[in-house]
Image 1 (cartoon, one colour):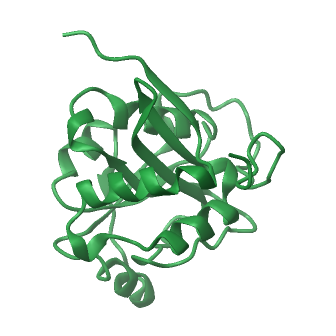
Image 2 (cartoon, rainbow, N blue to C red):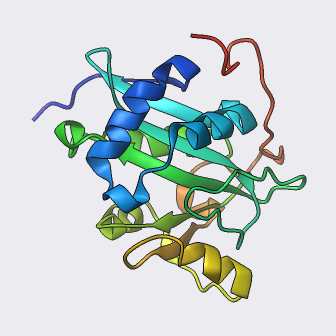
Length: 192
């Protein structure tokens, strides 16, 4: 079976309705975050939020940001960009059911990780995504801090904090540049 051509680009404010539609189709209602929260995150980390389209229709999105290992963003919480990040935090990957199994989610994750090859990545695994994240090299990681455990438990079901070592990415460890959050004209959340 041939996979479709996947177009990945920065998320824009104009994408909000499509992003919310994907979210509604992917998550149980208790996990749906309001549009205002998604827009706030896009403003906080514009170079770290993407959408994927197949046949010019948005079918998936990914929201990440520079963070620190062990720090968990609670469901519905704001992104707090770390001054001295040591990981890429993957907060939200959602793929519309009709695009499932076509490599769209994996393509978005590869895209995000390629921008920060020397840094590990961390996330909260929810719903039935454990096998997906394990195949991507993520392993469960203990959460020792009480505040962070509370943030983890904000997610319904059995949430798991997972980490992928930089070495697990198979990407170069040559660069030492830290992931940074900055808005460029091409990435500005106000551009449609």
